[in-house]
Length: 441
Ligand SMILES: [Fe+2]
Image (cartoon, protein in one colour):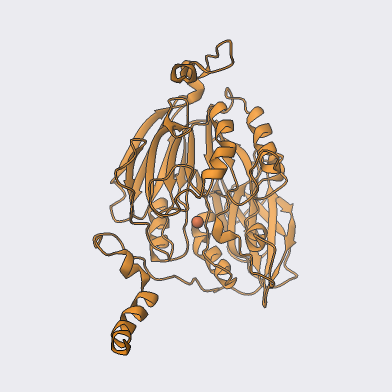
């Protein structure tokens, strides 16, 4: 027995230290995880770092950054010519403590009104380098880059480089940003890693499980770092929580839901979602896109069923509103479904896409259930990102690119039509049921 233990000990140590080796058995062609990238702080304490921008209500952008010094000004100077700033906005700043860690000063400044499709040059806090961004267009076409579960590894850097290699307007992230997992300096490192990208295009994010960071007894409030650093336009969209919100951009209404906020019919999130959906004018925003973290439809063996209770609570709201697409993350793989409602193909339901393959340190979710569900049209465990291009009011193109391929290679793609233009999905009979639903009964 003792000899057996001694022989097994090196194997046990190997499995504990390199769990991905176990995951890769039988799938040696799959990409293994790559090392973490720690992005160091190479500016002065007073200079802005971790600069990123987000959409903040009609014609406005929020600029967010961190300074090590506490007396740095929360101001942004901006204009359409490099080095010439004819506008200035003042905002607010905050900070937080997490165990022995004290954050820098986190600044948020809203600027605008801004013109669409226009490049602005800006400087934060009266100090440091000049940055520039381009505002989204006022109408079609508009292109979203989509990647979830990013983390900060060499794969993350690869994903971001792929995203950056072709133009786009807005970045969408369905949860799990830094994978700091209680180590707060990793939130700072993540902010510095994404700064070259997130200073140039709006980054719109929602929370994943890695943003929760509740530590028993020591820190019992969730989302402390996430809420302080990644302030999203929740107040601008009538929400009372940074964990769920919506925004309009170029004919598209985007709803960011919170998989880790209450979602039952009595919850604030549910009531807010219902009210938000009710005020959407599909003539102004023919497209409706929803992002959330834990997928409602998933044929990977990882995280099976974790989105079920949220789906059961909220799916009917999205279906009745004729949401076009639902993106999720959490599962570290790519999967595209057909249009679905209540576990069945339904041409008036949303397309479902899992895009949790951004490149974090946990690696890929390698195993899919067999046989494949007929609802699942494409599935693959490779790192990559997606692009959603709304070409006009009625037609959009979705594509997925692997990091291992050149940028010109599209691994999966589909054209689809907006449900706002579908007569069949809006014809309502005497009982209030859409005609497509009636046919199923
Ligand atoms: Fe997750």
